[in-house]
Amino acid sequence: MKTMNGLALCFVSVLIGASLSLSSPALAQSLPPAIKQNVQTAPKPVRTIGMEEYRKIVENPGPALIVDVREPYEYAAGHVPGAINIPRGVIQTEIWKHVGSAEKADAERPIVLQCQAGRRATLAAQTLGELGFTQTSAVIMNLDDWRTSGNPFVK
Image (cartoon, rainbow, N blue to C red):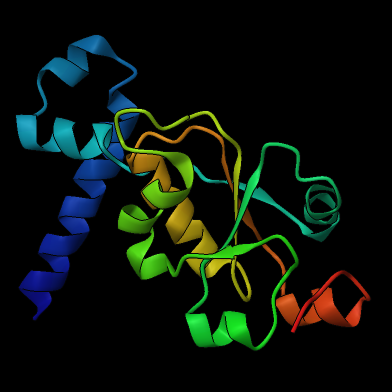
């Protein structure tokens, strides 16, 4: 077991070192291809917003698509008005029904992802980023706090 932990720690250290060294072309050239690929395909940071910014979007969504990524039974129990329901587990296949086909989708359309607390929304934003969407935001807030603060909520 110690060997596995040591091996895992070594791999993480190599990845961290690799990501730092990619800024140096000479060092980046000496990295094994598998490590270069892992560093280059690492998830991009997800843009997050809080309750105040989300409230402004809900009140005036404009072109933004608001997506509640909770499960259908959670959505049915109450949701933010204007939000459509696409569970996080199927977002990569179901998003196209709302933005067009993969070939014709507007990858720059703002998409705001919301769940109960922000974890699933963050994962969904990462998934959409991998699909090429560039304007995704994950709402980081507790949906119960949203509701009890008197913000718009439909049952």
